[in-house]
Length: 312
Image 1 (cartoon, one colour):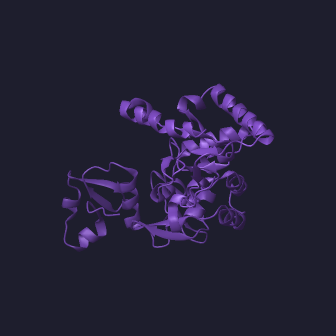
Image 2 (cartoon, helix red, strand yellow):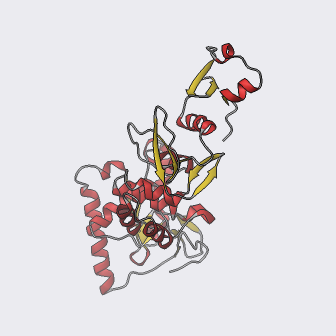
């Protein structure tokens, strides 16, 4: 993390800067012992300032580490910056900072020492609700993370090793509900709502192809054996007329092959969720009919983990 506008007071004094210069109105004080040129406009800059005066064994944890790693966090009003020390270490105490003693593996991200993602997950379990925690687990096991991803089995085993941590039981419950293939927190939320209605999505972010193997679309979830799928669409799919038109067009070809794709938006997740309940009933009915007479399978599909292998 390159922050050329931050410097330690001790370094400035050693280079010859006078105390009067360090009190200049052009400098701000993000934390004791650090000066900055210009305003501190984000939490990342403040964390970089704290890192300049932290001990070598201090590291960012909890939501602060989650933000550095890029995890999908919900809005948490009143949350501070979390810095931890090893269990036998001395905690760092400063205004606006939440100090911890933690057992955790650490890594360096953009020049900042943070706890490893799997330990962040365990420690977030004491702060987040179940759906938000499952969204973090979905992110950790995501196919999009390449070599950095962990398997659900590995994540569960790590939670068991950290069973003395506060919230470890909640972490284990979240892992049991996580799935490989989710690509956004809203997809996680929608999937969990369907699950609460007794409907488990068979495949996530599958790809659909025509009879010639030409790619057609990639719904967020579905049941290939039933030729049924769902999509959770963000606001841009409805506010941008060109995007809305493209969405309608791309549903046409799969529909000609027998695919039923239901689109949902954030409004469907509010209130009584009648549309989602009706869709769950439709999936159940499709499964009942498929048990009596198998669905005609035209075209192909593939999984997010093995997109090159086409299946009927």
